[in-house]
Length: 168
Image (tube, rainbow, N blue to C red; front, side, top):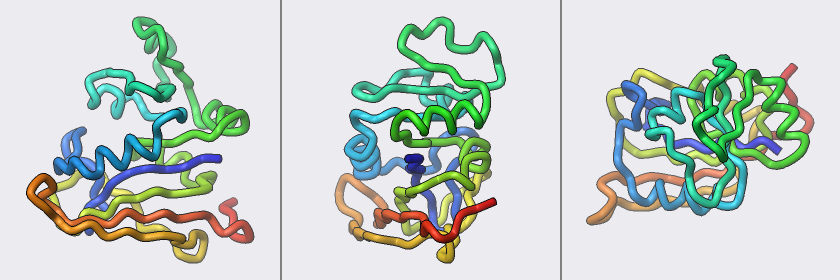
């Protein structure tokens, strides 16, 4: 199973200058809860924007065209194309965590989407398309109001692909 997990603003923005445009501790905890114990797959730019650090309690996989990438990291798995990612997903459940190029390449194959919608608009230079409600069904939503530690109201959403509607 392939799961996308990401946060976006009201306009679909997911990044700005290779970083998250917001700081939302609730969403970081949500991300950790959902991905702990699983394999997380990301593009090279996303890995580098995280300071090239491996997240504890998760297997980290980086997708890059650079053949010798990741040799300095003992516990990092490196894949080189979407077919490698799809083969990995045949062996185990994976979470795609970014970036935009990887989301776009794997979008036709995603089974489940866990999306946080931050109920604000931010400067962004990376966007994801709206989820196609013909192909996906929202199965759960949870609204969280802003508080002293989280400056933005947000909503967690869980989507699944409708089996009868597959991309070609």
